Each structure stands twice: as structure tokens, then as C-alpha cells.
Amino acid sequence: MQISTIGIVGAPYREGNTLVVPSGSCLPAYCVKCGNPSTELLNHTFKWKAFESNFLIPGSSLAAAFSRGGRVRIGVPYCQTHRSQRSRMSIVATVLLIGFFPMAYLLEVLGINKSMRTSVIVAMLLSGIAIVAFGSGPLRPIDIDRNRARFKGASEKFLSRLPSEPA
Image (tube, rainbow, N blue to C red; front, top):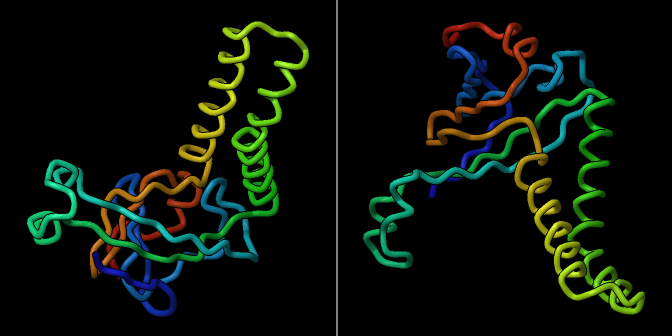
């Protein structure tokens, strides 16, 4: 798996509704969710693995030889509103994923029947997992290699500030 750090030189561009970040470039100082000016970056490490590599035998030398994928660390710009929203979602996910332990005990103490307790616990776990999986950030990697990283999920207002071809 290749590891690249995207940071100083180069220019990101768009391919339709896909954000392309060449190796050595950084994102412009606009929120990726709304396109408003941003002064702070949140560092994210994105991981991507090719779908076909899921069918190879894990741990085998074939899996290592034929799997495509990579990791990249990018400073992602958020406005204050979306940065706060992301923090709140992280807190909610943490409460749901950790809070099901005391909730199970509390429901038992209150005499709630077993099927209702199970339903509440499963709902808390699935909600927490969904928030972690889908609410962690607007950018979803669709391809990462040595030369570039490609993402879906950036807002149209953010993408409209980028050129449609590499600089």
C-alpha cells in the first residue's frame, strides 16, 4: 500500500463532480461542504482499497501482489459551522457506541422486557456505526495512487472554484 502526503505544491482540479488532488498539492481555503471561506484545516487520513482485492485470499502473497489501494493524508478545509457539526456528530457517535453498555443495564433495572432491550441496544449500535461510516466527512475516496487521490462528495460550490483540467 502506498502512502503519500499531499501538502505543498500542485493544484487540485475537478473531473465533473469528482475532486482530483495531485500528489504534492493542497486544497484551497474553502469549506468542502458549502464553499464558504475557511481558515482552518482538519487533517484526515483517507484509505482506499480496490474492490477486486476483497476477493483475494487475505494474508496471501497474491493479495499483496495484486491489491490496489493507498492512503493519503490531506488537510481538509471546513468552515466553523461544518467543523462544529462534525464535532457534534463525533460526540453523538461516541455516546451511542459506548452508551449502549449502561443503557442495557438501566433497561434491565427498569424491568423492560428482553426483546425491547435488545431492540434499543441494536438501534444504538447501528446508529453509532452509521454515523461513523457516513457522517465522518464529506469526502469519500474513490481512487488513491502515487500520483493523485480522487474523491466524491465535495459540494458544487467548492468544486466550482477549481479548474476542470490539471494546471
